[in-house]
Amino acid sequence: MKKSVHVVGAIIENDHDEILCALRGPEMTLPNYWEFPGGKIETGESRNEALKREIREELKCTIEVFCHVEDTTYEYEKVIVRLETFMCKIISGTPSVTEHAELKWVSRKELNTLNWAPADIPAIEKLLSN
Image (cartoon, rainbow, N blue to C red):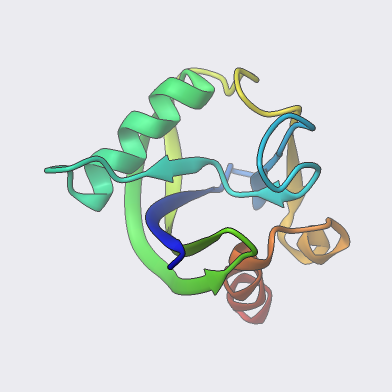
């Protein structure tokens, strides 16, 4: 039986309608795919708490969490991932690379030019349709 993980992703938008995209490094699972930054929900954490903690750890930023965007379950080769994404805004700090290979700001209409991890695609489609 495959392991299931419940993760949260931050769709961080800046004042120029650009969204922060994170490239998974070659040593990570799902290498070289783009994703929304975030991570696993720890026991006893709310989704908002997990997202704020993960962004503090990964990007060295403080965020405000807004509306829920998408809830997707995707079965990868070794794991089943349930990804919940939320619109977010940075309230302090500048995103810095700690775990990912690269971070970049991409305009909403150009999001589909990146090679996204499959679990992130439904959220991309929703963003492109708004």
